[in-house]
Length: 243
Image 1 (cartoon, rainbow, N blue to C red):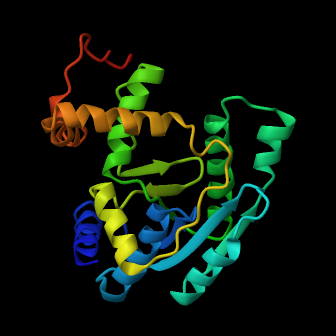
Image 2 (image 1 turned 180 degrees about the vertical axis):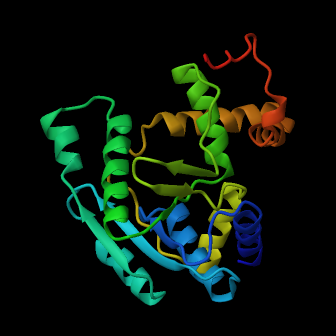
Image 3 (image 1 turned 120 degrees about the vertical axis):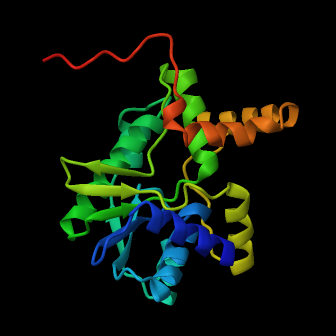
């Protein structure tokens, strides 16, 4: 965990992700990334020069037989309050609308439910478990599927919700996260969604594995690119704002 905590602390402090007396909510899914983020932030809180509060929020999509008690026991063990947000998102998507490509709609509905619940309980910062691999995959997916050169930011202010969204693990490789979760024996809950093994992100992940095998330098260069805003060059210049 030493590397994880050092990376987390450096990212938080150098980029002012958390300020004194912030109330930080971790979006918890039960997957490896969010479980490690919550665990690491709790460990960081013990020696952090920045005093802040920490809580966890789980959006229950309504799938049957989800082992919520595993997540609940984990949060109790590390002494972090957990809020369960009950929804009928799975019913709406699969039974009512019968979506054949449900991931985008599901993400939007989950995001809305999470933001609303976090603000309702007085939290002003939402921490998400995206890592370095996620950022590169998102960049590639946006170019392939939407024609945009874009990925998510390390911190974003949502003015309508008056909420900061931060990604403290953005400079961590997924392999480091997998190692830490295994070493610390953190519980990981399998995603119950029937689309979990058939997403565009998994396809992009597999594509990048093959790309890195052929061009090993690509991994490092992609990471450099998404952290280098001064070296963006496109065919057209950005239009100046109209006065």
